[in-house]
Image (cartoon, rainbow, N blue to C red):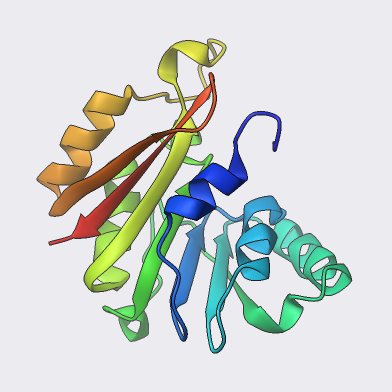
Length: 177
């Protein structure tokens, strides 16, 4: 993935502060989760969320090898169809959705859940494939960057910054209104 996405360029643009909480939607095996955990300030943590439990088990094993397992909690949830529950209402500082949206048919549900759990003025960080770079596949749902921005803004976010991460991927940072 690092060949496709410039992680340093992304992480240099993301907000970081002591005691922050991050929810990583679609964390999978944790490539991005673990790299974020390595950059966390004191008192901060990450909630890695995925619908496949085996991926999260692998993530924690990899986090242990990287010395950051104590900073990461996991939760199994299909965020396209379910919420994280009432206890997460406005409790998270930053939500990341990295390399996930192209696999999700109902993008609005995912973004609505991000908004619901974000604190006021929280950040939404999205990284995804440029739609014209994805191979055609009936199980993939690419979205053009401009269309994604319109959708996210219509759901109550303000565009903060667009980031070109590679020839194949873009990054966008939004702030919850």
